[in-house]
Image (cartoon, rainbow, N blue to C red):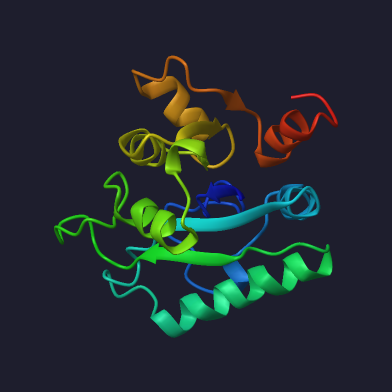
Length: 181
């Protein structure tokens, strides 16, 4: 099975330091939904692994998160795409869980659920914590410049060997050989 794991905020949709707290605030990055549809058409299963500490912080509820994800799924279906599943961590940074990236819990959960060797999986993110989680489980980390990607690229060390693309769409173009980076 060909599986790609995506972070949500900053990879699929515009990120916000104030959090994405409602469906109205969920704004797709240009080309991201079409890129997911192209992955689907090429036989890839796409799942999302996302920290959603806004729940622990009381900024939104699980019901609101479900509505945000319903909007994502609706917008994807309009362009012929889908995500197979969305895995998220609802905990805050000081809760001590294993699922909040950079911890590997979400990725291990995905590996078990899809019965895949994570060494054969690509994890695409815009933050250091996404890349660290991928490296911890032996997955292939990819950084995009969207969201917090440019900040990650300029402020973080230890990124040698991690491929960098302008966006999810640029990575998909490279992967499928259908365009420039």
